[in-house]
Image (cartoon, rainbow, N blue to C red):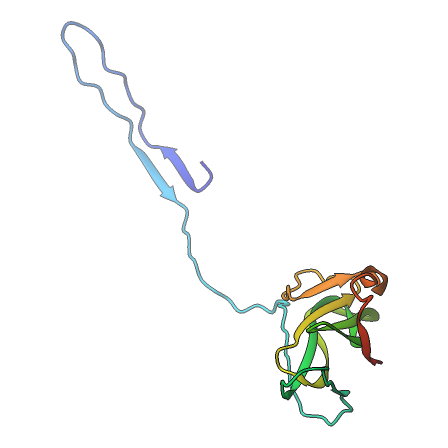
Length: 178
């Protein structure tokens, strides 16, 4: 036993077995149990902390005006945003091209790794453009680059290069290029 100290204080005897049974005497023990106390104490440890602050800043945002042939649909100003949650090293995410094909907008962005080490932090990087286009145009996102570990957003398709989309983009029109 590891949590207590046991000392025998008196010896014992086994009962004698005979036709007549006489009583025996059980040994006596003094048991000293471990004194266990559970408390808390304040200790400084490293814990992950991610702080996201949003600030307003004037920047140049591409603005695209799309008029579809044979369409009576009114245009609507839409903000198209692409974003990725990053860990490990910082990345840059930029919208590179926008194609129009049938009733879809194909957004091609590029996610490039930079040298800044993020340590244990996770950050969200993004880019956006404004498009004045019919509201019923569907939007498909393709990001050139590796899908980040633990990526939260499944709305984006990650590809290794734009060449993977050549047959899909064959009848499309390039409407924006950065």
